[in-house]
Image 1 (cartoon, rainbow, N blue to C red):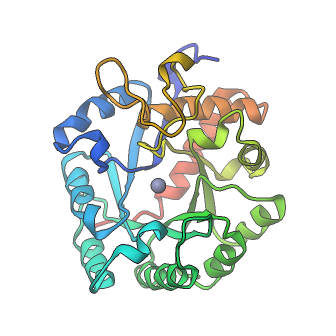
Image 2 (image 1 turned 90 degrees about the vertical axis):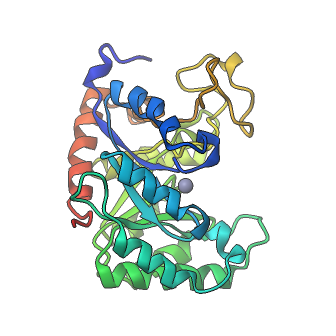
Length: 294
Ligand SMILES: [Zn+2]
């Protein structure tokens, strides 16, 4: 499945971790990824911080590249790994950030709950999630949410922070009833390559069931791509768990992959891809209206 003209595609990558060391330590190393993505019609890049250790680099990327919008937060995987007053550091980071476009500020993310088997303390995760949502609620910030095997509690918590203007449930897998519950808040759903992988049965069901006016796309880069590769022959993808690189050494899991995600979502929903992209553009507009201005 291919776009007849790739220039028709216009959407943003709503979730990535461009500050990840796998993209290289030098900020200039990202230029090639932005160039490729823009050439395919990817317009904006939401770059999500995950711990105090990567907030500074995330802010630097947003200061250098005008189409990058940063979020700062403590990811549930990192809750047990931080020391000191990280919440104050987070507020300072959010309040101080002005993007290279001179207009945008920062949102909150990636935050949430992950109750999959990783030996993470669930109560500590909830406490950290709520502490951060207080910050977002107070400042009326969009929130990028990670929720794995914790949907019931996540959905309860969302209702407690009514001043959060918009929620982005990233790479979310949910039942129809959970989707319905989520829609009581102003939520959008952004889907990654993993969500549309041929073997991701439950995730693909979620993709099929969410309302069309709530769909967005994300790369979740540099999270490794599903084994079918998205734009690359299967033989070039080493494995689901190993980072795959092109012959020139660049990562295959990169913002440009949202084009394949949109194509796959269109196929799952039996919608013409052009129509889906027009809808995503409208959805993005509504989402970004809630993004903080400076
Ligand atoms: Zn993420």
